[in-house]
Length: 223
View 1 (cartoon, one colour):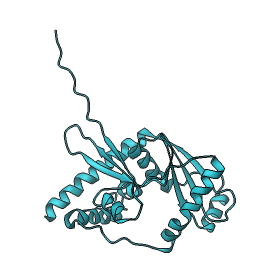
View 2 (cartoon, rainbow, N blue to C red):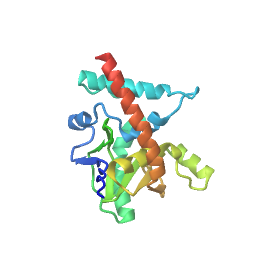
View 3 (cartoon, one colour):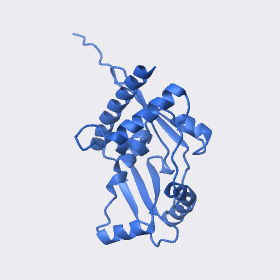
View 4 (cartoon, rainbow, N blue to C red):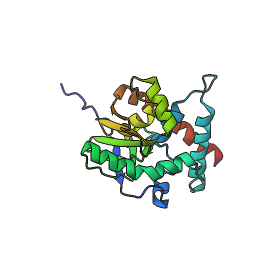
């Protein structure tokens, strides 16, 4: 007796773009799609247990980009500017101390296939690729915060970066990432090696899929 062949679930597609970050081309690739740097915002809950205000603000921002076809104005501050300035120095330090040959990555887009339709796209801008299965994220951290981390001891991974790193591993099909907390002149910057957590990524996928569904409905309502 013959049985019907089961259909394989559709496979995601991953695209790596060789573009310079913060250029017009890079901004256009990001326009209207959730990026891993905002995954903590997407999964955040408000005080009443409902979606947080920052999640709503982010959804409205993306909806505005989709409807207008224009990239929203970005907020800049001294911390963000410092991060851009020190990133090349931090990358060089990592290569020298870890004997690594880094590959700079402009932008990554992952199209997530949903079996019953409703595919969605996520994106990320990793600071570098270390190997084909490992990436690097650099955070510029003020000295007083590095001191605070030392006082707390135990060398604990800063949990505020978990959603971004796990989301980036999901987007890029990586198995692990190194997180460097860097400030010029700071001796022995902390480096955390983070392994892929598929259970956590499954939660991220559910939350981002729901966010994308709500985003599409919002766009339809406004058009």
